[in-house]
Length: 111
Image: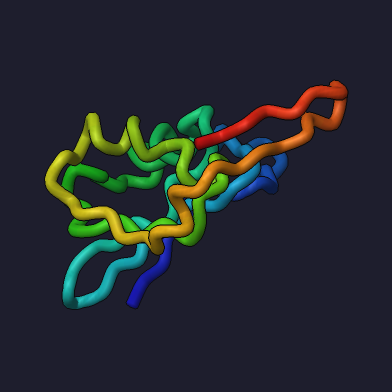
């Protein structure tokens, strides 16, 4: 089994890989390719994939850990590259979520 980190929130000094909150991992074994989470809404995980030699059109399935947008934000961009891979998530991931933005006194609703 091989796990490739497409994106996470720490940037290496001098790296041209983009980062944002929310991870995205590509898991590969003899049975195929699984995309675990799709990163945040800036789609940096999707943008980092080609830099790592990853062809997202070959992903066999997507697993979403939970419904926060920093784990699901790249899903629509992923579908532009691969509209055949099934997406697996628990039904609660579709519930509405909210976030209080740190620099504002407003609440943003998701879902």
